[in-house]
Image (cartoon, rainbow, N blue to C red; front, side, top):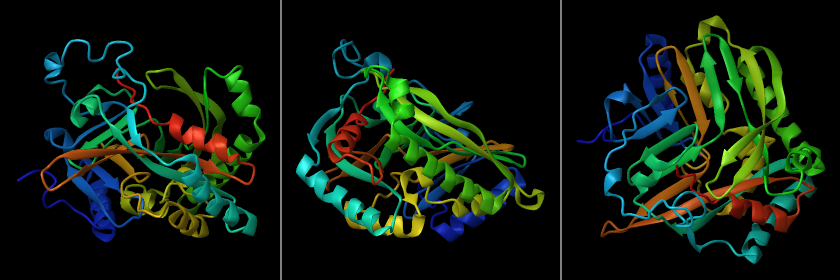
Length: 348
């Protein structure tokens, strides 16, 4: 019987189990899907090798079998060391425009101020999915066999004692663009998008914390894609948890979901518009996962995400999920190109 059999699932059970393990100081790994109706908790996850993960300071990944990778795989120009996986089918600009217009209609009505629009692209991988995950380079990562792999650069929340920090990413530009850092920081649309998310997350943190403040505002993070670098803009929002509930991780996490950076503002009506525009459930894509080591909980947003779908014969197909934030000032073609630019494998 595998570690994924008989796990804690369902939002009520997940929340209660996370609270219980947090109070007891028992290490656990958890994941929650975007729709908040599925997820899992694994106690003492460093002791198993089925579900692989990494967060800063911890990982249960072991490099096994890479000497068997054929010569030339991973060489520069092979398409394996980073760069694009081969896209077999993605939304055309016309298809994307139809989804984009649903979001724009919501923006013009005032039902949303910012909405994250995502797409599902079928891709082929240069290596087996587990090897792609093991060779990927990212601050956070999660591999669930037969379901998905993720190499995420974005922290959701980190909780140490009573101190909570959330670090949303909003604003992306390729470093090959002249004066890229200045361009993204001065771009009116990007500034509005980032300010909206910081305000939303500050409100989310304020529901559960005291002394809420923005610690670092619009700082740059470099993301290696293997074929170049992306600049992403982040901010740190901090708060102080009440001492009586600082280990009730289930209550804390669920109160902040779905993550603001991958949904939008206001969350309620924006999520309805997203469902209408995208037409398919996201599942674990843009959900969150995290690890509690007994003292500190660290978690990430499930982006840079490859969904694994197996047919009746066990043959696997792969779907890369990517997207970006849409505001009233967004340009459809630019947003379409950004969505495609996020289809990459940061293989080391």
